[in-house]
Image 1 (spheres, rainbow, N blue to C red):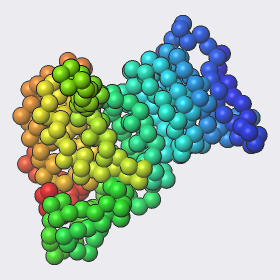
Image 2 (cartoon, helix red, strand yellow):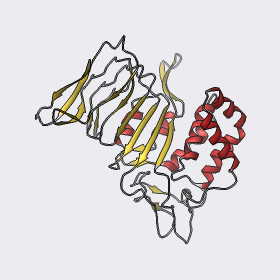
Image 3 (cartoon, helix red, strand yellow):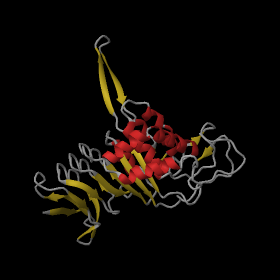
Length: 319
């Protein structure tokens, strides 16, 4: 029982082809892919490699993996967490489909690429909790000498570098736009669920296509070059305005407040106000789940809601 491998076409690299075990009877286990096999770097997960292995609870991929084949983890219904880096350059569709328990993705950014994140969240309509470690060069600060009507975020790693901000996004000022170098090196994001719905109009003999949920809009803030955190924070009202959205909205607010990378003062107050207005419900939910540390953190956040911390604050004005 264990991992199986083969050489790639050149013989210089190794490909993970599967796991030899009785998946129906296997107990829950963590699967860690090694970085090398028989002296060759492990660079790919073969298509269908772990399909239907229901005993896998979490998977960690090494920094050597560059390709994840189609349906590699298809129908791994016990899979709850996937940990990987931005080394993955090629993601074939369906790799995490029908992974009905998958809730957490941990991503280490080492090269400044967000393509794998875009691919993963685009392959699932379920709510996903994504925690990102920012270790790529260039995350120390964002600075521009003048806040004019438009500012290119070319030095803003968590935004689309080619996208310009309009005057409504960036306040006009005569000073500098500053972000402290002591910003958190982590980002904690929630991508809400969504699904497609087709409704038949019998009178018009036609079908109408609808997207239900806020998840599609949230996923659109991710490009292969970055994450538009300003747009991410702006979308909060699309979640709070939906029935039954409290738990998702609370998780979004909590993640942005605890790891406030590039969080603008106005948006910080927006999140704090939401948690304060729903504090009784939130603390009841957390204590019911025995999440004592989170409950304590919420109380700490609400107790300091009148003053934004010096670090992590933009000097760009409210959006």
